[in-house]
Image 1 (cartoon, rainbow, N blue to C red):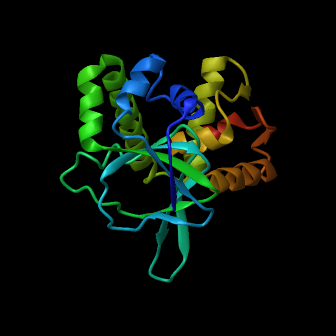
Image 2: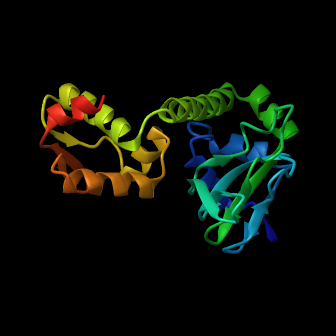
Length: 228
């Protein structure tokens, strides 16, 4: 792990993140005048170990971070992945149980801005926009967790069928234009990207659908309804 300090390029990267959206550059510089350190991690490095105390909110300036869990058989399970501009730790930092429940890895060479709790509180007091951005981030992750809990009692095919039927009626067509990438769709559904792709291919083999990068065409909508 290496450290470096803020520069104009870093400030511009921060301005492009959701957390600092609509916040003037001079305010961002002022926020970080006492907290200028950025940490750099090489690909494959452990950023946080399971059960390690969460002491900072982290913003990914560069790279990809993966949340992984090792099961009782020693198999590594990828739980989630975060990319440039996304935030880690905001749901743990102010919790009474603020330990990382899983291990956090740098999947590629990664740079993080790490902000301590006191600095976050200062930013919230000084900027209503920052406070709103932070609350939106927390709310969004709460909704994703809620969706995952709902999804836990359904099969992936049922989750996909429910989505396809809803979008078919909403768009008034059997050829559905995806509102987001398949990676983002998998995150919203609370399933892994690879699991989503695997099930889509199975549904295509079963003659239920056809798809490309941006659309999914339903061939047997009654069969999808029967699954629900």
